[in-house]
Amino acid sequence: MAIENVSGPEYSVEYNTGSHTVSFIGTIRLQTNDEYAPIMALLQAVHDELAPATTLILDFRQLRFLNSSGINTISRFVITARKADKVAIKVLGNQEIYWQQKSLVNLQRLWPKLEIEIQ
Image 1: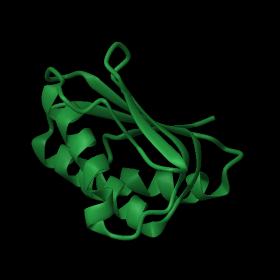
Image 2: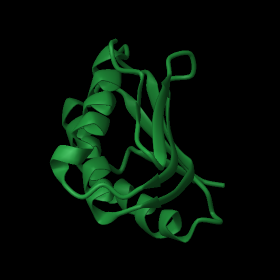
Image 3: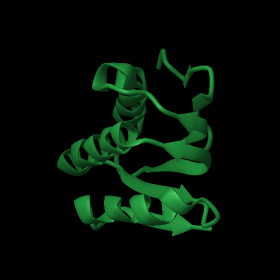
Image 4: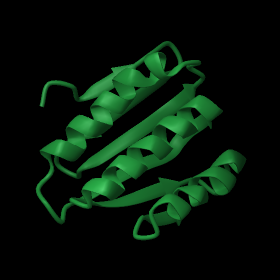
């Protein structure tokens, strides 16, 4: 896989191949789908690389802020993964970060099999 991380001035999205974890770190305030395209490409590449029945972990615990365009990007990825139904997805959130409590649980409405753990 060519892309293992995407970063900007205030954020980093990193893939750990050993743990099958994509970690979101910092603050992501990109505005358009085009600006979020590298993050979507990373998520899609990770998904496509994983063997069937593997669990992909999306770790948001260190992400202080994600705007509505970012939440839309994550939602679109979850819908794509649901349609493929190849890998399981587990979402990790931080209970001390308010937006995560409200927004991450909504991903389960898009795919009831998705596991959410807010710590």
